[in-house]
Image (cartoon, rainbow over all chains, first blue to last red; front, top):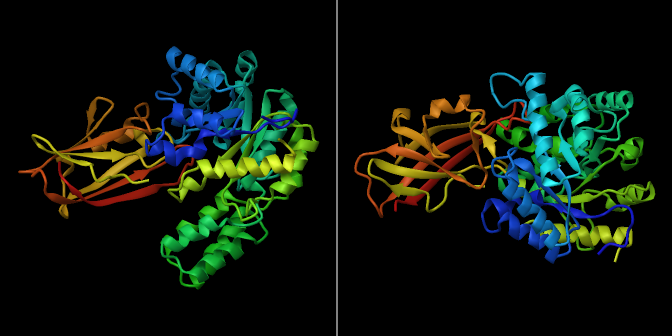
Length: 331
Length: 122
């Protein structure tokens, strides 16, 4: 139970991808786990992961989800949508196709009872703008996820901010992903690189390059140059490039620039140290910013280590909740 | 996430069914999935001898690129139906397949997966 009137905790079932994909737990069981381990009250799903036939939603599934959440004392916080612009490999979706693709997903979110959707950069500001009347009618907020390597001030995000200022709708918002304000690369990444046979010298070089300043292009360019000089193969360079696209070093205070438009949060996490602190992401600095600004939406704990590890997400989400409750002074 | 498992290979009337899992966290349209380099005991299997059984349909591997409305749900297995002479139950076979994903919301990026496994045919 939270005693906080502002920021409320929760979990994205995406965090349990290893449990789910392996078929060891059904969606129903994972939702029950969220309640059992007090990892709510917010529950986030990903449409294309958790809803068979998405964006088609059967009445049966919608009723069943509602019943599950109600029974477990949980609330639907956000539905993850996908901007599948390259659904045909040989050509990108037209703007109209992209718009239609999103209409179906927003309608699905409304049918499932989600007040917010996470949408993605490839949709672009124009498609997003066109979705506003639907969003208003269905009472579903459109949250653009700001995920590394983007920052609040990269050109792509500025284009959205400009459109938001013109349209001025409360249904246009942002979803910060805290991987965008990390201070280090988590050990689970370096461990994964080691397991793939990449030697320590090359890994250390990659971490050094991650800390460089400059645009993403400049940093990756420098990274490739230095790795090649150190004898890294194309395969090794390719494997480690991921660190540039999932984690970035923006100052957490930059979130204040867009705080009034934050509609949801992805509490990204990877590894925890012996004190229970997240090793790479400075939650002690980040959470007070949101609490003190009066943000009153949900934060979904998002453990994404399943991309490189077979570990279960449940203990990780638990650790994240313990940490956040401690920082926020919650019971 | 493994494409193949220890129970993936089943003997059929015409040869084998090889069960595949989608190595991704969400359903993907078949137009973003490429399957190639199917081999048994180191021998490449001709595409004409392979079909993909999924969602109640039997598809040729070269048909997949067009199927932007046919989704492989993340929890489902899809089956490569392989024509093969005299398959033997209880015998171990070296099986290989390359499955490449092109996630449609990350344009320009490919995720190749090599499935290579010694599986006992059931």
